[in-house]
Amino acid sequence: MKTLIELYDERPLKNVLSTEVFSPERTVFICPPEVGRDARLQQKLREYFAHRGVQAELEFVTASLLDASAVAKHLREVVARYPDCALDIAGGTDAALFAAGLLCANVDIPVFTYSRKRNTFFDIRGAAFARDLPCQVRLRVEDCFLMAGGAMRTGRVDNAVLARYAELIPQLYLIYMKHRRQWNGIVTYIQRISQGQEVHPTLLAQGAYQVKAPQGGRVQANPDALRDMQSAGLIDDLSISEQEGVRFSFRDAQVRAWLRDVGSALELHIYQSCRALGVFDDVRTSVVVDWQGGNQPDAVTNEIDVMATCGVRPIFISCKTCDVKTEALNELAILRDRFGGQIARAAIVTAERGRAPMRHRAMELGIDVIDLEDLQGPDLARRLKALSR
Image (cartoon, rainbow, N blue to C red):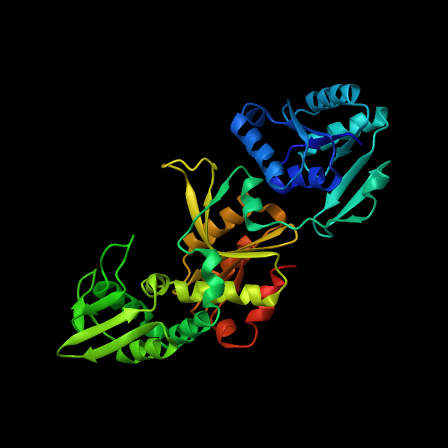
């Protein structure tokens, strides 16, 4: 096979997997008009293959994938131009698959497909090279966005430095769980006494024992939590006095950012727990996806708290320190479907006990719920590992 014919699919993985596995000289996409006109999307596909080290010429043939006659016509033309070809029927619409059947009734070409449930290629007719072939492709987090025309941008956390905090992150999480009910107030207080430039922040925090809260009212220091932070090495030189106020120094700028952010402790714990399992090919936290991949100032972006990959399966995890709203579930489902498709998994992690209405909505959307009971019990590793399957 020198030429691979792909029926373009809205699920990105279906468009790229066979090209990577079978390395044809060219891949011809039978695609809808909007894709045929979208030079940016076509270029993003080329960039994806270049990023993956796959050399293949890409060609885009436009036809309405709801018009079986039009698709069949273009399929015949492609086969006439490239006789040494094979047809992948893993993607496409019902009409496109019907057109492929019409073609195969008259033209003897190899036909194969891919089963996401079995992660295996199958010989449909005359494609011995694909017969019962397990897929060995291992994706990175960035790949999942690139294949869909997006890009991964730098988020709140530099993942490259996290290994240096391997022993500190569990300490931060234990403090968070111990003071979970007061955590919002603790973080708010730290924010108020450590205001200043965020580009080159000072590590010194100092202020009155009780300060104004952003939303009105007042918030005060939590001596037990601050002492726990000092014992864990998160802060140094702590002094606490109701009369003279509070003063301490953050360990470094990274810890300063974490202690000023309500969600960091839980997100870092889930990130580290996923890495410790050893079943994921890639794990990242604070992943920002640029939907259009152009890095424009007005680009549509979303942040994913933790994301992992296992083989070709992406896993999207959202972490919440409070009750989960329907909007958060809907957003997570949209991201999973857009950048992962049917093979992807999604989970919501909450430090509360998941309420029945939320669980029902999550079940409707196919989202796993990991709640306080899982975080406090022995099942967290098992629940996270199950996302890889």
